[in-house]
Amino acid sequence: MRGNRIGFKLGLAIMSLFLVVLLSLGVMIDRMFSSFYYREMRTQAMELASHFTAMAESGDTTNELMMGSFAEFTDVSIFNISRDGNVELHSGLHDAADRTFIQDEDLEHIFAGADSSFVYSDPVGHRYFVTAQPIKQGTSIISALYVMSSMENMDQTLAAVRDILLLAGVSAFVLALLITLVIARILSRPLVQMQKATRKIAAGELETRLTISSNDEIGSLAGAINDLAVDLQRFRDTRQEFLANISHELRTPVTYLQGYAKVVRDGLYETEEEQQLYLNIIHQEAHRIQHLVDDLFELAKMEEGQIPLHIGPVDFSGIAGQAVRKLELTARDKGIRLLFNVSGAAAPIPGDAKRMEQIVMNILENAVRYTDEGEVRVLLQYDSDKVSFIVEDTGIGIPEEELPFVFERFYRVEKSRSRQYGGTGLGLSIVHKLAGLLGGTVSISSKPGAGTKCEVVFEKTDKTQKAELVR
Image (cartoon, rainbow, N blue to C red; front, side, top):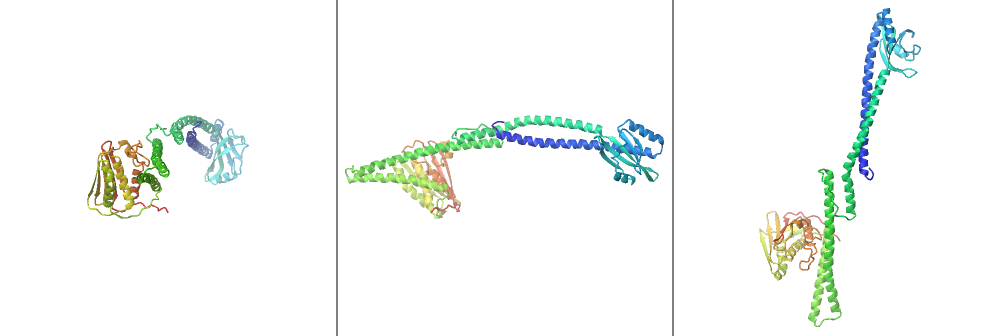
């Protein structure tokens, strides 16, 4: 998996888990077979020893001959040990001189009436299952009968089983390795694609998109990356538009300031009235620049949550009425009817009078600016638990696809930067931020060519956010 480290790690983890399971299963099966064969051999050896013991206790010499013959033709060896340790009877292939399997402790237990069984390996490495039982005559024990059953067949069977288990384990491991390589590559492919896509996005290729459409966490992550790319692209575009807007908005007043300041400085005017006109233009353009700088500064403080709020009872109807009167002249000059109406019983609400006036002025200025004919209707509606400030105009309207972005900073629906509409794209962003700080909500609905409706709602209970005062 060259160049696919996540796939390699995933495959390594899967194979490690599979190997642990495979080894555990192999050990368990081996022990299961070993235990099974051991129990079977122990049962057979005990039954054979009991049978031989019964034959020996009968005292019939014919039985002893039969025991000897049986041992000669099988893998069983028989030792009859007297109380003093002498071998009274031996039959079978095992060397009679090898008595290392006979221990004094075992003899004591056997002559005490107990049975004994154990596994014994002779000097050349052959393994035997040894069963010892006491031979009684009446109520007394006269000797101990040792029956040695060769474990060679059992060992060979277990070895064959282990070979089969090993072959099956190796085959399963190889097969699992191939399957894991394929699965790991399939599972890691989307992650690799996302890695490459995020690197491209980080390098500035914001048009990059992922085509992963699975209905799981990977698909959700891919969708989030696509959304991030869209947001970044939109932010880049709006930032570029904002810089172009600011450059345009600053270039014009600065040109006026430079030009008319030069006229006044060089005395290139004929009358005092002309001089006063030029000074008024300089003052207006300087005020325009100051207004732009103030908006930028205010928005920066809002973004940091450091704008000061002075909360108290506010006469919202008075603020709205005063704002309407301020804009009446501007509206009249454009031939627009500015209508104001208050519905319900007006009463003070908690808020910051200065910031609420800023909200009202920004919304009204936008409505008047983007309305060329018709009317702007202003409604202040008092309900039992809230106050709604509604402004409806008959202006150019906002396309439906633009509505989700109108509250973003630097965003402008009208992008021509013409002096007819002006603006920097900060007004509604400031309104949205201030309304949120004061516990209110802002909503906008619009249809192109039919006008726009903007509604700000404040609850009568104080839900303003605490803002830190910057000194």
